[in-house]
Length: 107
Image 1 (spheres, rainbow, N blue to C red):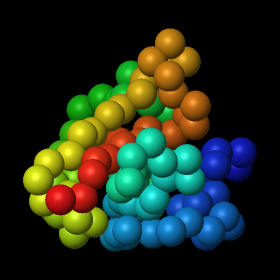
Image 2 (cartoon, one colour):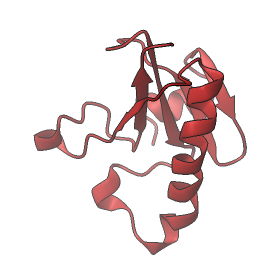
Image 3 (cartoon, helix red, strand yellow):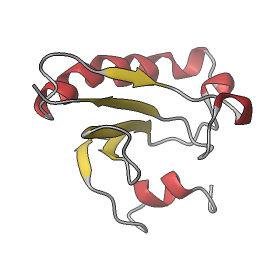
Image 4 (cartoon, one colour):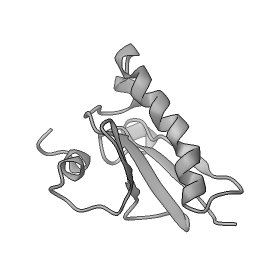
């Protein structure tokens, strides 16, 4: 999508503090963190929200959720972390490209 902020980050048109990247997903630090460590993992393929996912998204959703603990540990969240997926306006979603927040305190 040409007007999607996260698609522009995926395309390299907008810089991001990247945590991880492969062919399917990108993880980067949130520009408005709510915790000392706060990054998000997104699929590179544009999907508006979790409500727009179907069986065809199962592999990338699984990849995101299994990547979350690995990246959390690498970012210093050895003792635990939280994840969050805001879905739709009523769910607090601000950028309409599926993203999983991973956040917590080091130590």
